[in-house]
Length: 128
Image 1 (cartoon, rainbow, N blue to C red):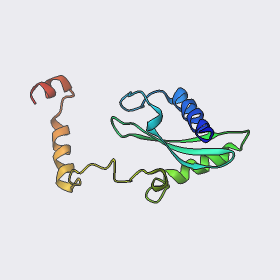
Image 2: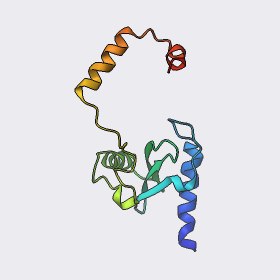
Image 3: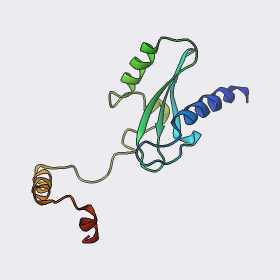
């Protein structure tokens, strides 16, 4: 059981620092944090919001380590497929919408809409 104490402590410190999702403001819980790697001086983690599925990458420095190592680890995490998500049990497709891809006609339709849009979102959503 003692082997789980560091996980809880590290996750608690991450939650104490981050508190809420920067996108939807959902309050984080320890289950939102997936440990990607553990090294003696640094852990890398992915914090995924349970509500909106926004992700943040975290490098927790456990000792007086070189911050450049943390920056490099975070850069490696954020470089797309094969970036360590599989190790954390996170599927890269888990947060990808099943909606059809955006095509040229979608962009042109949005361009035409925005050309005539006056910025009144209340009116826009009342008419929907």
